[in-house]
Length: 205
Image (cartoon, rainbow, N blue to C red):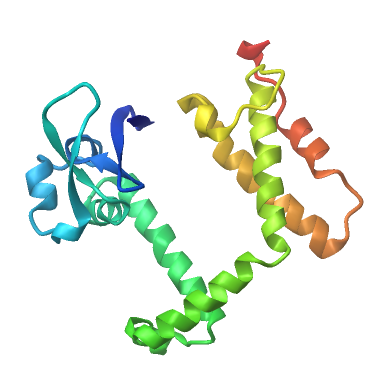
């Protein structure tokens, strides 16, 4: 079992057939549903699994990753709305990258267009820019670790909630700076600039 804390809510995850599934009750509480049943009543069974917790005989209803996204899209919580907008923007960028115009958006419902778009996405992930993504995450992790007084880099999975809150803007700033360095051939060390911009917190000294 693994646990994640989001917005003060502890969400338990269990591994089922190689996939991490979230306990429905925990997800319902975090997303402000009345209960797990009201959240999942219209879900297809392929989004639901029953999982047994370690050291417990009772089985719990859990959601697959796709099920979690379905729950988020059905939530009225502000953070869920923000996630939906982000997801829609990602889809819009894929639509633009595949040379479809706004009035052709319904073509994305076509399986053939979906295959073409996914093939294009898979190709882009093998692009050298993928290395920029890895580099940005490494620098961000180190910057966060420095800010909280850790002498060695702490990986994202081991960060505290406070560290994770700081990590998002640092990662975004790092990614933008790496792109600017490449696009404008800037003579800078990205890591040094980021470490200066996000120094050690006063309460971590």
